[in-house]
Amino acid sequence: MAFRKDFLWGGATAANQCEGGYDQGGRGLANVDLAPTGPDRFPVIAGEKKMFEFDDEHFYPAKEAIDMYHRYKEDIALFGEMGFKTYRLSIAWSRIFPKGDETEPNEEGLQFYEDLFKECHKYGIEPLVTITHFDCPMHLVEKYGAWRSRELVGFYENLCHVIFNRYKGLVKYWLTFNEINMILHAPFMGAGLYFEEGENKEQVKYQAAHHELVASAIATKIAHEVDPENQVGCMLAAGANYSYTCKPEDVWASRKADRENYFFIDVQSRGEYPAYALKEMERQGIEIRMEEGDLELLKEHTVDFISFSYYSSRVQSTDPKVNEQTEGNIFASIKNPYLEASEWGWQIDPLGLRITMNDIYDRYQKPLFIVENGLGAIDEPDENGYVEDDYRIDYLAAHIQAMKDAVELDGVDLMGYTTWGCIDLVSAGTGEMKKRYGFIYVDRDNEGNGTLARSKKKSFDWYKKVIATNGEDLSNH
Ligand code: P53
Image (cartoon, rainbow, N blue to C red):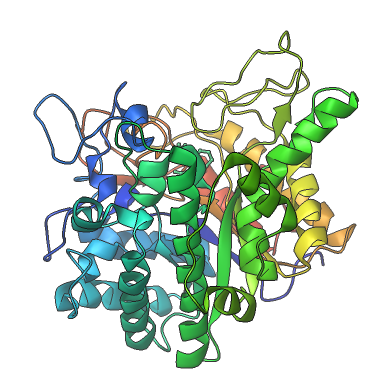
């Protein structure tokens, strides 16, 4: 048997992409609510276009999303039917602290997640909780400039105190920041950063990153103090960088691109700013303001496991003639001529998952957890909402096989696997509903029309079988 007996199979979602109910239960407004669909989405999530309130010209898909706020019981029952061992979800910070800087939490928000976690346990599903999945209360954005301000560390610490105590015994797996490296690529979505004219963006991003890294270490400390059973992970948007050729300059460029992302995990897992990053910051004139005790916190409270998302590998080249890019503006890279791509231009590379797992395991030697993987595709349901999604089954089977190889043939220690968007939800990159990842179809379109009814796709029963056989049977029949 390749996988551990207690291997954590499941699926993953994020609050802002599925809950909706953006103004219900006392919830405050968050950065993620204000990302519209359409051409303005990228400038907004990149912190280039200011959108601090809703306007009439745009559609904001997170407001209602797939209404999981009201339908979570039905959805968790379906996860239970598939045999999920775990369900990765995120807490919406602004449900617990609507403004972010209050001293007392919002009881209604706390109760909502308590009920949800209890619902999971009814089906033997262990919640895996992302403390922040791209969300930051808008009040913190407007009053403090979000994570550029040191004060956010204290507000995050309060949040952690409250949730670790309240959910003790209900939750034991925690992730501090979803795709912490996203701060470099989509800083408003990743960390609430909006840039003012003339600001040194790199300086702001790395200062904000320092605050998140310290906050992550403090969260790990508190989690362990509140309950020694708690296990805390970091979370990286992963995907190995390949060199386009064997030209040493290309190889070096791909190493540098890897380091840009590993930087965060180097701090969270090894507990120190890596030498290469200190040198690079020095060259770029970036100065990180630290407080006394920061370096000790980072060193003493490293993560228990490394989690990551994997959708694709990436390619680097130094040759200006090699410039054909993949689609997708957040993580665009050079096109790999050996790979096929999804309808959204994300290149499909199962072996790249095995390579990425080995890279990460070699580097940190801690248990790994794949907390996102999957295919965003256009589904065509029949009149009963059934989708024959063999393309999704093929994608997942190939990636699970690669992950099996990493475990069985390479000895990588893997705790679990949660596919992204186990139920169709709003795309983070584009805001579309049309880009679907789920085993469960949701009747809703890009403009917000539809009944929100849930129905099983072909992949539903397939994944159920994969889980029942602990990954031994990946066949599609
Ligand atoms: P969507 C880009 C590249 C890698 C991971 O993405 C990314 C993104 C954002 O587009 O984000 C993660 O929805 C993220 C999820 C997101 C998922 O990947 O654009 O953690 O919130 O939905 C898939 O297809």
